[in-house]
Image 1 (cartoon, rainbow over the protein chains, first blue to last red):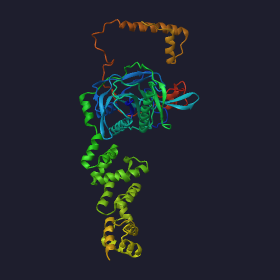
Image 2 (cartoon, rainbow over the protein chains, first blue to last red):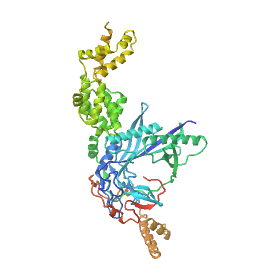
Image 3 (cartoon, one colour):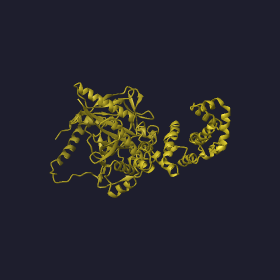
Image 4 (cartoon, chains in turn orange, cyan):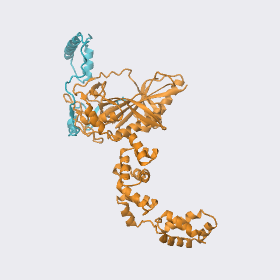
Amino acid sequence: MAYEAVIGMEVHVEINTRSKVFCACSTAFDAPPNTNVCPVCLGMPGVLPVLNREMVNKTVAVGLALNCRISRWSKMDRKNYFYPDLAKNYQISQYDLPLCQEGFLDIEVDGATRRIGITRAHMEEDTARNTHSIGGGQSGVDFNRAGVPLLEIVTEPDLRSADEVYAYLTMLKQILEYLDASDCNIEEGSLRAEANVSVRPVGAQTLGVKTEIKNVASLHGVTKAVEYEIARHVRVLDEGGTITQETRGWDADRGLTFSQRQKESAHDYHYFPEPDLAPIVVDEAWEQRIREGLPELPAARRSRFSDQYGLSTYDAAILTATRAMADYFEATAACGADPKQAANWIMGDLQALLTLSAMDIRACPVQPDALAGMIALIDDGTISGKIGKDVLGEMFATGKTARAIVEAKGLTQISDADALRAVILEVIEKNPAQVEQYRSGKEKVLGFLVGQVMRATQGKANPRLLNDVLLAELRKP
Amino acid sequence: MSQITVEDVEYIAGLAQLEVDAATKARLTEELGKILGYVAKLNELDTRDVPPMMHALEMRNVFREDEAGPSLPRDLALRAAPSHDGQYFIVPRILDTDEV
């Protein structure tokens, strides 16, 4: 039987405010255990939480970027459950009136656009982190993470394949980074993706039994886990079995999902309005202010890069992958560099240098104006593109300008035909055998002769001029 | 109206980590029963034409600015815990997977 997969995503992202969502404790990630804690996030009796305004601002910004309706009137609720990661025995979250509702995100897979419905995005607090390495039948609890602002973004069951899941997560992550709403560091847990997966016979209207994949530590892991889980559902159903509704983990080493626990059929969290926090009213004026402050989003920037700079769709996608990279490219172009050349240098040599030193482009020692300066030296024939590669490496290592390096090292290209001819004649004289071979029709020898001239000029010969003069000399009888 | 039993009191005391002696248990059973009975009386009211109250607070939009301030010294934060190791709060081993 032919099946189709039905997938919905729940993504938790930590919003990157300076302080926690209900108290002034720092949100720094790597602080020693239980040093960013206070009576509020430790859930001491009698304390009062106060909502961080920035959390509302950033949540509304994310909601608008995901084409959501922003609730005029919203509130926080208590979600009650007993677990050691909650000091209060409840998590402050949003239940029936989330701040953002009914949006969508257009994703692209294999050149086709698919619209994925966003059910809701709601504010809540992150929980404490449990450490199971304490031993002796005990666990340690670190409350630094408790109270860090968390946004939960839930989709409709609109995704149909693992590739769509990957595209959705990648686009969502890009948007969150463009908005400066979250670091989206999946390894540090500031982005956590869960997938609800089920399959049904093609054409069926009802949904199959779903399983929930949790605790996967990378985007590729989520995609692989979804792929595995779809295949598992199909296999079980084809063999006449049934799927059990449960939570499943992902074993990255063995490449399979495994049962973690049965899902309680009706987990009753006894939600009720949080009496310690006042309702949140985002009026039109506030929403409008946030809308006007939104940056250009990845999809819009991508198509503008194609139109304005004449870049290919592929190049535009790579250059807009992060806001920092896109900003860097535009700054380089604004300094007068040819956009296509700038794009090639940034995606090629510069990216390679950054990758090699595990450096983010925001910390790049070569500033956009310096890169534009190097490209200008190639444009005006001062150096060849090949020398440019070496110069860029030197710029990256020393922070010096291209011109300073070219002058100090005497790298200026030999673009004077007479000067070049002198070297070429010398090479011709020293290699009579190869010259004879060339003249008798063995044209492959040309490469050897070019190489000899390049070596004699330490790579500084203008390549085109070298070619012209060398050919002219060789054709002389 | 459901009646509060001694077992209910013991269960709740257990969750709240309170040790309660037999006499107190008996007293709490009676008192909690009375409180629930009092609240149950409200159910007798006809509220068909009363719009639901969405929130107990009349206020709206009470916020703090996003500024980080000092936290508690760790020894103070840990002091009231039944068990700690100087860094972590110590609890019986958690077998379940992480919630959220």
